[in-house]
Length: 365
Image 1 (cartoon, rainbow, N blue to C red):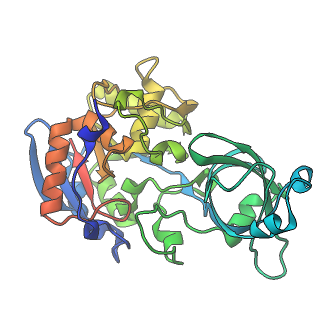
Image 2 (cartoon, one colour):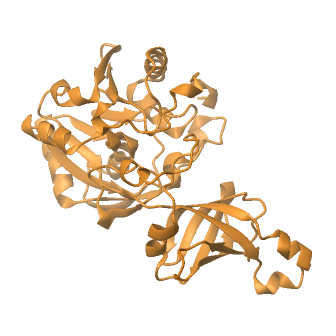
Image 3 (cartoon, rainbow, N blue to C red):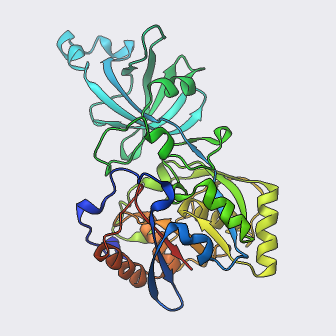
C-alpha cells in the first residue's frame, strides 16, 4: 500500500493546543466495525457504552521531561586544533534536544535540532538553576534520521537533573511552549513513577479520571496495567513510499504475570479485551506474535501493524485521532479497515472534533 493511501484533510484549527479543563469532558466517536456506523458521544459515557465484561488494558508508563534547551559551546579536544577560534565561537548557539531512549546510565539517544550542524565530539551545556552543577553532554555518536548519542556528565544524576531543567515533550503540532500545567495533564492518572521513561504520553489514557475508573469497575469491568515505554517507535514518521517497507524502532514493554493471566482468562471466557491506546495494542500483539498468546515478561515491541495483520489479542480499541501518513493511523486502519477509518475521520472533521494528543477519542469495536 502507498503512504498516500493514509492521508486526509484536517483544518489546522481542529488540532487541540490545550487540554480541556476536565479530562473526561472530551468527546468520543463510537465506531461499530460490523455495522460500519458512527455515533457521537461524550467520553463520560464510556462505562455505559461497554457491555460490562470487558478487560480494559492500560499503559502505566510515566512521561519524563525529555526536552532540553542548551548551547553548543565547543568541540571535543581532539578536534579543537582543526577549528579556528571564530568557528568555535560560532558553535555557541542554542540547541534543542529531545531524549528518545536511555541506552545505559548516562548515555541517551536523542533527536537534536538543528541536527545537521551538531557533530560528534561537540559539547552541549544545559542551563540549571542557580547553585546547582551544570548539566553537560558530549555527542559521542550519530544515527539515522537525525539521531545522536549523548554522554551526560555527570552520569549519575541525569534523571534528577531532567526534573529540574527538562521540559514536557509536547509534540510539534502543539505550537506553544510547555506550561506548568502540562506536567500533570500530559500524564495519565495511572502513570507509575517506577515506570518513568516515556518521552511521549500514551494519549488515549489522558481522558481517564478516578471517577471514570471507579464507574468502570462498578460495571464489572476489569482493569489491568502493562508498561510500554513510549519512544521513537511511536512517533517516528514513515519514510518509505510503500507502507509495508517501514521498520518500527523497538520500544521496551513489560507484562506482569497477573496481567498476562487476566488476559488469558478473558480470552478463554470469550470476553473482549479493550486496549487503551495503540501502545497497548503493539505491546500485546508483539507479545503474542510468536506463540499466539500473551506471555508474561519483558520484550521489545517492534511489530509494525498494517492492513493484513491478524489480531491475536485485542478485540476493541480506544484511541485518539492520529496524524496523516503515520504508523498509528496505519495501525487503526489495520484494526477497522482503511476506508472505514478515513470515513470516520471525515465525520470527525465535519463534526469539529478536536484532534491529536490533547484532542478527543474514538472507541472501535
